[in-house]
Amino acid sequence: MGFVRSLIQLAKLPKSRAAIAQRVTPDYFPRALETAYGIALDNAGSSAHQMGGKPSWKNADCPNCQKPLQRFLSLDASAPELVSLGWSAPRLELLLCWECPLGQDTFTYRVNAANELEILHAQRGEPETDFPYENYPRWFAEARVNLEPLDSELDIDLRAHFYLGKEFEDGLGVDERFDIHRHMKISTPRHQVGGVPFLFDWSETLCPCCGNRMEFLATVADRTVVGEAIVDNDYVQSVAYLCRRCQVVSMRQECD
Ligand SMILES: [Zn+2]
Ligand SMILES: [Zn+2]
Image (cartoon, rainbow, N blue to C red; front, side):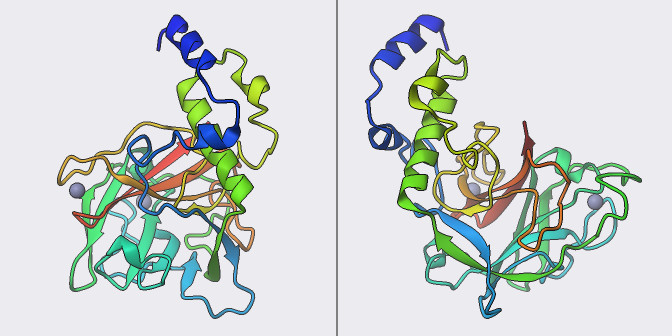
């Protein structure tokens, strides 16, 4: 973006965060769910959603490591907040592997009617020997989690932050003018399903089947709800995109 164009655009910005947040339309940033949910440990242990554990799908192995993929999130696709996704399988699982090059490129997959994982794209390469950290757990402790709608002010701030960050990468004092880092929690990855998240990378993900822009589904930050480190770097996130038409999931890892 040109500097002059940025200046003109800055002059035209609405004064309120709420008005700026409204600029993040579904066309501007496609998302699978309009409502943003945080992910919290379910102390009652009765939620159908889980963080961690092994994949529930068959053949859900990393093609490089020859062992089951890491499961960051397993969502009950029939839950009221997710039913609009139209996901055809009982569960929608966010899978990746951090112990080999798989996570260095977009990992794309779907699940078939027999509940088997079908990998559409995976970066191939030899497993790592000392990454991400010593005594790395292959699976994170399985925990029941609740999806809790985000506080509305936080939701507005996330949307405004997204717009300002994406439009004004060259600065122009936007950060100070709108105090966009007033909440540290906004400019640090967090667990979130739906809505508009904090992201390090705004580039689009295209569905390998239909070529359309995929919709944001969820982001998982570095600490599981029971405190295990996924990579041991607070500035890493795993981001899931969805093509509802093709029933395809793409996972990307992003860092600052
Ligand atoms: Zn692997
Ligand atoms: Zn598609």
